[in-house]
Length: 70
Image 1 (cartoon, rainbow, N blue to C red):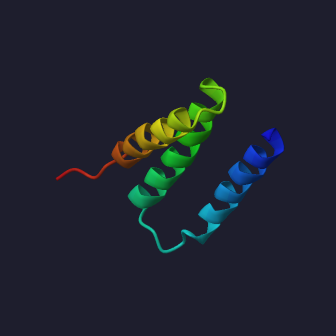
Image 2: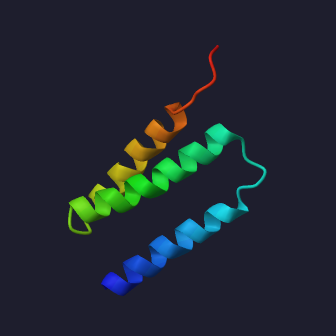
Image 3: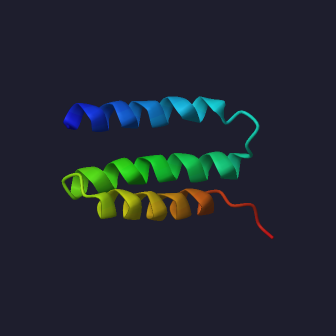
């Protein structure tokens, strides 16, 4: 079970290489969601709710990092 999660995390990380047409803010959002999902999974012992919650929080934080002023 742990190896499946590890492979899924590696696949998600490698798929970020396809983000060459994204803005920096979009990249930050995607990276934040990926890191948050992994962190949420680790902190909750692999809980689905923890993974999804971590991804959501990480995506929001990543979106707000270096956000251009209005």
